[in-house]
Amino acid sequence: MSALLGRSGEARLVLIGEATHGTSEFYRLRARITQELVRQRGFTIVAVEADWPDGARVDDYVRGDGSPKGEPFEAFARFPTWMWRNREVLSFVEWLRGHNARETDPTRHVGFHGLDLYSLFTSIRLVLDYLSKIDPEAARI
Image 1 (cartoon, rainbow, N blue to C red):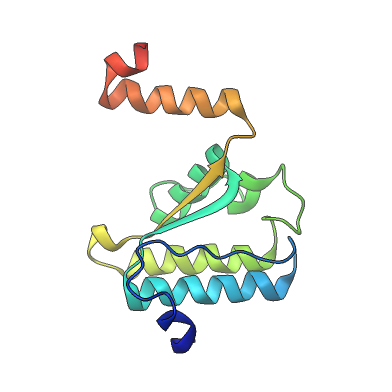
Image 2: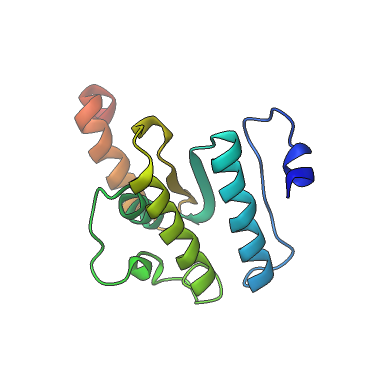
């Protein structure tokens, strides 16, 4: 693993892909690489190919800011089990939650964020809600 991490040098952004969605081995290796980036290099953001509002619910869970209703993967209920709602991702999310709970420095807590906007109107509403709190003028625009 150290040789693989060494290839990223001093990069602040590391992209980890996969050859196919839903392959357990890829999901586990991606989680392991990400865990080492967090532990050894201090990475604090995990951005995934998932819907932004769903990722935000998982982010609340891993940060301990919210208690999921039922299983944490109800956030990904739209996705098939082989995409995000599977045991490999659940295990990784639980690791993130445990890491954040143990980390006393809040600036080193790791967030989980979806980058896709499949649910366009829900995403727009959430962005406007956020802007209303921090920049009401921008929200009005």
